[in-house]
Image (tube, rainbow, N blue to C red):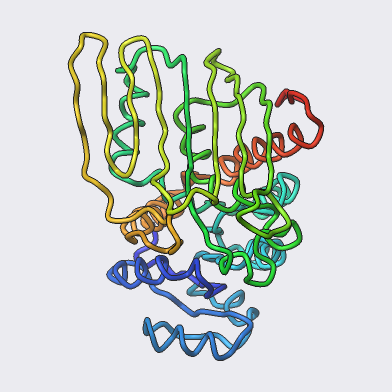
Length: 343
């Protein structure tokens, strides 16, 4: 067991905000040993805002014996090298999503951590919403019966200024558009409830509402390994943006997860509502408009898993599964045919 858990933070951009708030609230058990980002002014501003110490170079944090794990918040094109450096020094890794720009990069990150015998977790905080936890319990308990139909929708909005930021929505920096940058959270949560997809046929496109290299709209028909069928729709072109949702139809009832609320329609005609409306989901023009409670629970669960020698959830392999699905959706759209995941 680790009494005090030491974390090094690398990266202090937009994604760092909820992490910083979460780490500040977890200060009774987690120490931020240092924050590093390439821009010295950003480092100092981050330190003034949250009171965390800064590091002038990456090597200082890699060599620090107080650091148990790396919290990696860099853009996707700057993940492999820090993961390699910290893992080879025996530090565990908690990385923002996506783990890599492609499934191949994600697999390389997993291989690095496996060879170094360190744990690898990925930030899919939607799994830690109270309604998500309740839905997972219902599925595991068989309350809905056999799941036969699955529908996932991410009708979000980003204005053009979001994509005007250098590198955003490009393959070189982000690895893609709406699928890998926004919908990945809902797709990961979906797979955690349904199990793997066996076959996908998709269409991805860039609407006239945005100017960017990659897709701001994607839709797909899915056939799951379980035999269930379903669909996915994701976009950042749906002004002014609505909460994402997952609907599962089973032999005993159907349930919709939307904005922190579960609505259950049982086959006997009764209905049930569970949960409370979320204060924000990040689906509108402000991508950071959501609470940091989910990040707190995720970071705390990661620290517990590492301390107990267990695999973190979500893990690197969870991230690989969802990135393989995203890659298959893009390939299906590009080639105009169904893609079997086993291929």
